[in-house]
Image 1: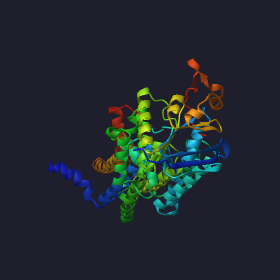
Image 2: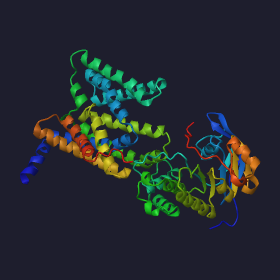
Image 3: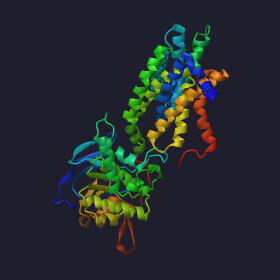
Image 4: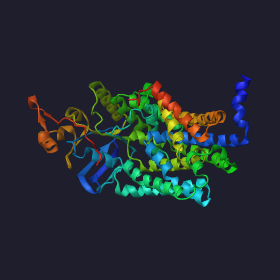
Length: 267
Length: 253
């Protein structure tokens, strides 16, 4: 028993893993909670697209030697602007997102492949949990409570928006802003392509397990935090890439539920 | 308890209303008092929903004015909450208190208490923990009424609340409407049921414009009903009249 405990504690004795793991747990839990509203408001496509849309920003930052998070944020602003512009010509929201985001992904690929592959590009796509430094930890410690407070403050109005069924661009706008911040924060640990797993996976699981919205958010945050911790354990002992392992851990419960309880949406 | 005297709660003066500047309803002019049940009668597209959406503040009047001395609550026809939306009947009632709170405040114990009392008033106290989407149509309407009451509404606008309800649910909702009126609430209810309208205090007939307003005995006569429903009005055996049956239709404009 003690051996098993020791085995589980093993990775956390490395300061690199402990710091990176804490960042992944904090950022993951925040992303998981926000993901509940993304799932409930039917915005998973926007969530996935935002993370793809910031790709050129990430590559640009790598090429220019700027902080990856800064590149991610600039990329998100460009992606949001492109979606807004595309909406002027394309009526369907989903189509507008596709029209806006696909060229941005292509632009990112052109930038990444036009010369020598810039350092850190793999990390920006697939994450590097262990690369988290003190600033990343400080950012996560500040960001997680702020996101939690904003979610707490807007909880009832988001809930009411779903009951009335009215179009609530203001609420969806707030949600996309929160999503952008969570994606930018999670991109560092999990990578731009895998951050969406932390946003959607735990929320999809929690939705099937709970009746009310508040427990759903806490459950999703807990699943996301646990996924980060378990992913780190598995990747350490099996010598796997940490970010993708965490992403898979975040999705597995949703997959298991789909097999065990394949009722789909409750009607 | 029946209020001892009637106070005017809603005054509507020469109101023209519609969508995107296009008038859909003209010349609405009436006043409602405490404890009054006013039936809004009219064909589909006659302007009942337009009037309700204007009085609830969702649409701006094109011209004219209205004034309410009490808080207005709405039970909308569009019952569009998905059945898997993670909200209970109590959550729905608590959401009704949001309009009375500043945007930065979240509901606390006082709002929860008000919501529970409102659920009790509509006979849904035992259903407080049940998911809104799992309630029957009639229970959902009553939960929406509870939301309006929890928000302190003394004027209720109900848009076709009886549409799609079975007889038992309809009777319970009608009894609730009578109870609320006795307690002093003003109710404007869009309906297709002439018998129901006959038993209420006032009737407002609409067909793109105000056709008539007044006590049912004065308003519900053949000429007015023909103007209100046009050729759709059905004559039934014994010389009675029947409004055309309700068709579900989308009120998105």
